[in-house]
Length: 116
Image 1 (tube, helix red, strand yellow):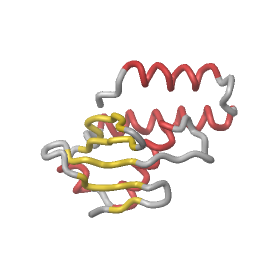
Image 2: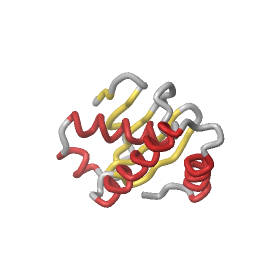
Image 3: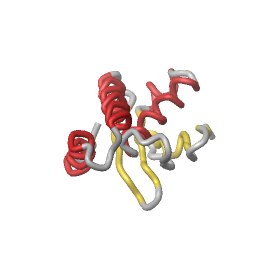
Image 4: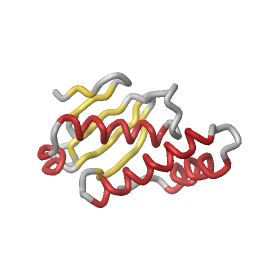
């Protein structure tokens, strides 16, 4: 996963410092970060970046295609949890893109995952 060092440092700093983050959120964010590492090791996640108003998640086409809808939803929810540093009151819009053709293969609007 190509997660920018700056983003990783910011999120890690927020998790560790906890100045503005509730302990419960900090624990949840750490769990989500761990889950993202596992998904990265499994070959699902290729890249994570941002464009205005949206988190762009690039997924391995073959691996994404093999996992069921529930797993895809949990995967995207872990991305949201990581980005929001575990705060359940916040959400993020996620666009899932194919790593080969860069086409949209999923959208998460904060409430549900849609697969075109």
